[in-house]
Length: 360
Image (cartoon, rainbow, N blue to C red; front, side, top):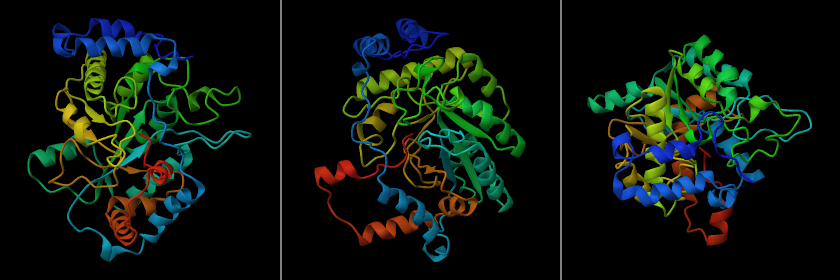
């Protein structure tokens, strides 16, 4: 059974109030909004659709994910020298729990600090996503020594573990919030960590922030809030529901935090799997967002599509050196070279087994 309704502001009330006079979608989307409301309030978790073809990477894929950025370290000549800014993607900041599996999509707090401090010591400069977008709008080249930090979902540990590090190192971050789960007492239904909700797992390792905690996070001078849809579903083949869900997420952020045109990050995020690009990218244009980020391993450049921007997943296997290889283009260049050497058309069965990038 799923309880996706936040304790401090049930999504059913928020969606019921959305409409043209309330900053919500147009009347043409009323049927879609009713479907979104039903999906949020029904106790049956099957009313919310999450990916079934997005399994955790198998051991071989994990090895590749560890090895590829390390192979890229000496690959300077392969790098794309066109100026670009890299964006890093994080999710969870939690320490492992004895007796439980390793948390997924996680960078422990001490390692987070080491990664970011190491980048700063290498001459990198952490900037706001808005600064990068302003440079693109002005037609200016991106600063190759700048980088952006983003976080997806809205875990409580982003506040308790992450924020002190961001403030200490003066690193600005953009948090993309799955607004429908703010304040829910249950783990995120899309969280693939087997330890979520376990009595021995600290609540902050899996719980979402409530409204007050999210406000405390957003009050920091180093934090910007963006949207990650309202329900973080698998929206493939459902562009109208996606547009309505995203518009509701924007409305929640505007009514609660006064943010008019937030940045947006696609849930799951990969183009190859259809989680971004195509009809979903076209649907974004019907919503009040300023940009859209995917999970593609690409830098943000002056000629980048504002609604198809890339990010690099920061993992617990990364060091400051491997993150630098991602940010400066060496990692992406090596991946493209390896892909050219092993290009093939996957069958349906092998496609389902391939890792599909960042969860987002």
